[in-house]
Image: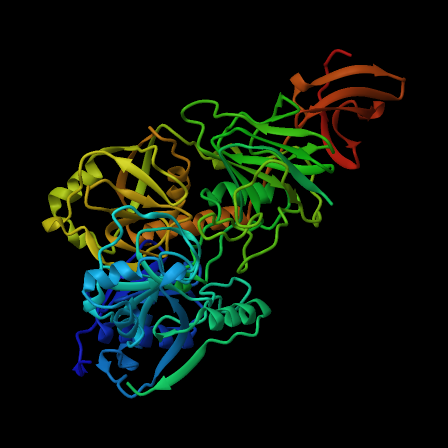
Length: 251
Length: 378
């Protein structure tokens, strides 16, 4: 992570009722940290005009109520927050990482493409599992579909191209690899990622508040489990007693 | 329980309200009515909160049966609505009795619009998901089991809280005109700096055609290519808003509509002013559209004016139209008329001493204003 002063973010117009605070153009943990730091101060400043905040890889979209504020006033409000909250200063090094553990059954019927990924990488399936589960992945943002995490930090040794012909139906909870990305399908959908496993944890439950088990800006780690252990988790999820394990760790 | 029974859902009928803001950071689309203006007006016509849920019918092919007497309205596209096969007007408060069949078979023409709203007094009362009844089929959220309506669904209607009178109509100057050549005003940004002056001239100087690949996620356009500088159409994904105009690598604009995703990876040249977005959402494949630049100040002023107009809405009060009224006799003290309201015929009595000016008649417990015009032949 870089340190020191970063360039001031740009504030861009996004229609009559939203502004985008853009910190950069790259997929970069330092930029992503600032997005979530600003989301936090804007959220807690609670000026009565903010309707919704959408943090992404590199920017924060701020939607506001045009009957309460104007683009000019909101720009001033955001600029003041950015300077007083010192968002440009990288000071998140000592903020502990929140790491959520997602149990995964790798291979077999749960991850039909695990062998293909291993073949492509020129290693054993056990090595693929060890590499995939040996990393903490940053949740840069949630998007594409409810609860879908855009994860960063996969080891490029297990990078694999997408399927030439996407599956018509990928089961919910499928853990996949596409090029250098890894991710989890929150719900059944068509998809072309190489499937290496499945998590019994529900990544999106509209009956819960919040409806997702981990927030964007946090980290997740995949933990290999047996089918029996996964079955136990399924039962606990169904009973509403399952809690995703979270540990805090200094970065 | 009052309900609308689905006799035919057509290609796509869904429950929609004003959507579910507040969950975009979890990847949850806002969703909601594609034409929010038509939904708001319809809710006001039947005495609902502007945010109430209705059925959005796409293109036509839909038929519903009222299981109870209901007050309702049809707004949005003119899909030739009829009650028991008799044509009924849009933008009016209407009356249905239990067993009535409401049909929306097909657009009256190419300029009819695409999406009609069936709005019932009391509102559609399906369970809320994350604070909204809006259906997002892809996310399997809202509506009836998170899906489009299907044959034999009974779509529940909420209790009537604030009784209103049929015979109210949206004033003519507030009824939108769909079709023709649509002019959509655009606030530039957030990535307008990715387009040079030539590309900007192409964007604002050309007429585009709405593609048949359009859906509730986006209105896709076909026309001259709008090139981003150095062909850099892809960006690291950032947040998007409804009405944002993405320009992907083929240079063909996509206007994001209600079911849009929460983030996007294409450059956005601008965002449609919300007051013009309904016209885009109602544009049928083949419709022609061009863009005009507007400042953020002017766009938000237009939006504020529209919200104020909706808040201060005063509907026209309709008298039974002369062509729909027929004298059927008198007992000396009272005149009897047949009056057609909302496609159904009612017999009303008018006091003989009210032969001039206004009187009232009560039909099915609802009071109607009746203007009696002197000189009509009895």
